[in-house]
Length: 399
Image (tube, rainbow, N blue to C red):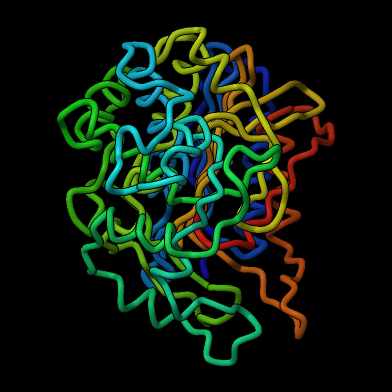
């Protein structure tokens, strides 16, 4: 694929980051095998934007820093913030049982034991519905008939949230509600979307747009109205751990399969603005933010353990503590992290997912993309080459 580089000059030549180092890191991610990568890094009042590679491997159309992206589970921070606003207004009790609000969706003992907080921090014990909504992926990689068939079958399917929630609730629980360690589950955040609708009398999409997206002043963020993304964007290539070769474009997709858990479209500029506003107490109050930053260990979809609060990841580095989220959907991966003091912010997007092929035992194999992304993390977060702890290897199903 052709190698393209597009860079927007920084606002100030005297920056707290190395512009050449950042561009070199993006170029390294592209050379390692990602068709296109683009990013925005902020330090204080200074901003750098850059891109490397292509948005379309067939035409060679380049990626640009302002492109819109399906940002996956970064949506969860927006949904969590909306819930916390309703907690502040007294309409939702953070430690109230979900069955009191949604008795038909979560009836009986489960509804009495699982609280709103447990949904937010993934300690509900409700498993993820995605393996059941995409049955051709179940049993990967041991089942010989595992395939991408359900990805294609569901491309234009309109899921109902209650249908997906039922798939999760009917599956074997991942643990008892309120345990000391959580298990990441998209089902939790579909339930939170239904909770928003129950207490606000409007759709979750409308409430989040009006009270989170617009409050943050975001101009290019929203829930898609159909399977296509409006505005400039990249094609989104899915490799599915080597099952799809060459990777297939899934940029046109009905996102009803993920809703308030991972359906948002945004830009890197908007994401940096959002997390800066959130950590500055401009989206929810300081007390609510403190609740969101109370973390516990959570087993992520790729099997790793992360520090997770209420819709927020905590990432510790040599240059400080960062808060934010990452997310993947079919073909698209995005990361957004902001240092606790709000000064350093980093968001980047890639247009290829699940690039790690697996060996005969089913273990994802190391790929040069993993090393290149680690270099990008170091440059974007710390800017001085210091090692930091976050190892970005998206091996799991969409988050």
